[in-house]
Image 1 (tube, helix red, strand yellow):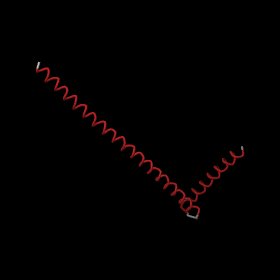
Image 2: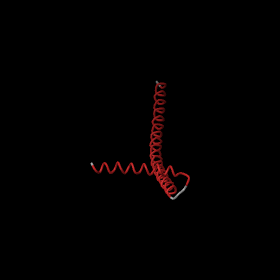
Image 3: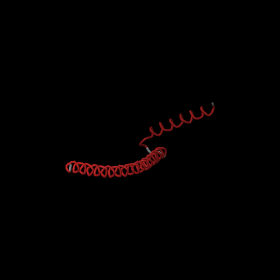
Image 4: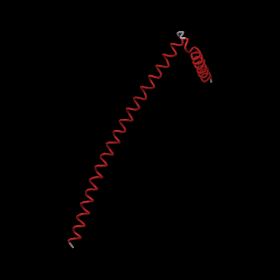
Length: 96
């Protein structure tokens, strides 16, 4: 009979340890999820900043080409043509 009691006590001890480990893992999981959300937010902010800088770079590049830089006059012409086409589409939509 004492053998059975020892087995039950051992099982209770193991179950208790497993429950404790499970609780620790739940806490770790919650912390990791929170950290992941923070990283996603930071990544979003950095992506927005990158997009802003790329837009500024493109604007500066366009301004330089319009000021007479010889490096990309054809690029400036293409961009102007694209802008004119976009304006034409907008005007056509407004006319409808």
